[in-house]
Amino acid sequence: MTIAAEFDNVVKDYPCGWLGRQKLRALDGVSFQVETGQVLGLIGPNRAGKTTLAKILLSLCRLTAGKAFRFGEPVDRQKTLCRVGYMHENQAFPRYWNARGILEFYGALSLVNADVICRRIPILLEKVGLADRSDEPISQFSKGMVQRLALAQSIINDPDLLVLDEPTAGLDAEGRRLVHEIVRERRQRGGAVILITHLMSDIEALCDRVVAIRAGKLVREGPIDSFRKESESFEQSIEPLLEAQPT
Image 1 (tube, rainbow, N blue to C red):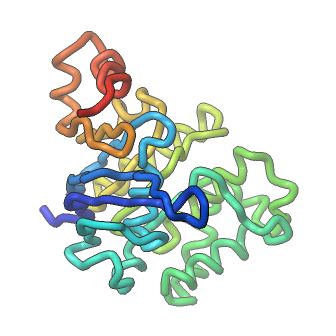
Image 2 (tube, helix red, strand yellow):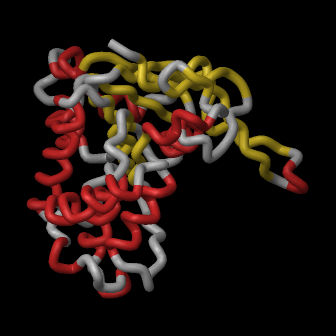
């Protein structure tokens, strides 16, 4: 197995207070790996540090201490970014753009050949159920439609590592099935997926491994089967970990 992403004793402090002289520790010595062919569920309460980990992996913010890698390369070397797909929790697409334009733009950002982008766009729009709305401005889209477009955007570059932050938020049952289908396709093709969500049912249905963090600290990681064996349900086994104050 290839290591798609690795965090080694990662620490992240944000400046706060008067003139930024105080520090807010968002991550405190977090270490884990994500292998190819694996879906990893990253769970924790609000402000646990989940999105900060994603931002470090995507070179959107710098770590304070420790090391982080994408496909064996330090995350500050951006040449591996084109191998990553990302779906943000809150989409901020320009409302006057249409779905086709969004996919063209993000495909170009990911260094995908223009001819390849043109071939992929109709396939992806059909897959997410937006083929008949491709030329409409996003301002006319519902929240669920924007989520579907964001999902298509995250895989326009056929990524080897896919990071999904609350991908099923605002989706109906059919939309959730679509997310599950795409995650399983990525794994089957040998890709890696990091799934960030509060929905334990999605974690249990899709993930091979689980990383639980709280207050910036890793409280437990392991195969999902190891969690299932400890209680009647996965949710019951994980809740005490997220409620307990890490040491």
